[in-house]
Length: 218
Image (cartoon, rainbow, N blue to C red):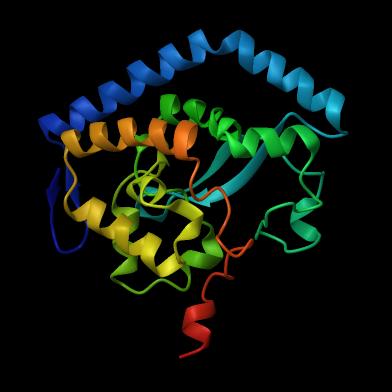
């Protein structure tokens, strides 16, 4: 995609191929995984009270708001309990099946729906929360120049083991250097990180720093 100083994106052939790849893989994934996803949904219902899916408003490309799909991995109204939006290892709000789903990244699979309808991509900066965007610098807002993704460069480089500043910087680098080949490499690295090394499911010290904590100390 062509990049300008104000973040404008003009369609290119690579951008068209990226969308076609998103549509193809999300459709195949939802079709192939339909029965396993239904079984997981039933398991969630049997494991704890509450809905199968967790919907949360996130900020996408060009600061457009949308609702992200995830399997529910925590008790109902968890955001108003404990650490709020921050999650730690062995967090008591996480359900039994929720721990399994989070450890293997399965809770993110419903985001294939977001990819299919077009408010997310397979690869791109992870979808962020509005209160975080309010604290972004102009440089950090570049991460909103592209659709958010199910996986990202920050995910394969360490995800939650990285500081927020490091994650956002990797997202900005991705946006500024994006190519279809880069997406393909990130997709293959994602399988290795999620299924083999499983690095960065939670922060090294157990819980992530609150977003903006580094700025508070300046």
